[in-house]
Length: 95
Image (cartoon, rainbow, N blue to C red):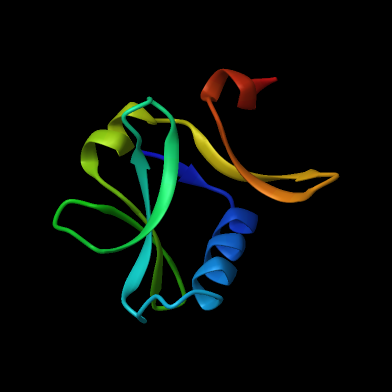
C-alpha cells in the first residue's frame, strides 16, 4: 500500500478544489507508458486504494499501482519553484 503524507493530502485537495472535478472525483495516480507516474482527475473504481480528506476522495490508486508502490510515500518537497509532489521509496525514507 502506498503511504500518503498529510501535506500531500492537503496539496491534492487544493488541486481538486481549483479544478473542474466533481465532488466525488479524485486524482488518480497512474503509470504512463514511459514508466513515469502522473495524476489525472478520475472516478473511483472497485478495488482502488482511496485516500480521503474529510468525505472527499483526493487520491485514487488502482491495485496494481498500489502494489508496485508498496511501502513508498507520496509527500511534498519544497523547491525554489514551489511545492512538488514526489514519491519516496522505503529505502529513501529510512535515510
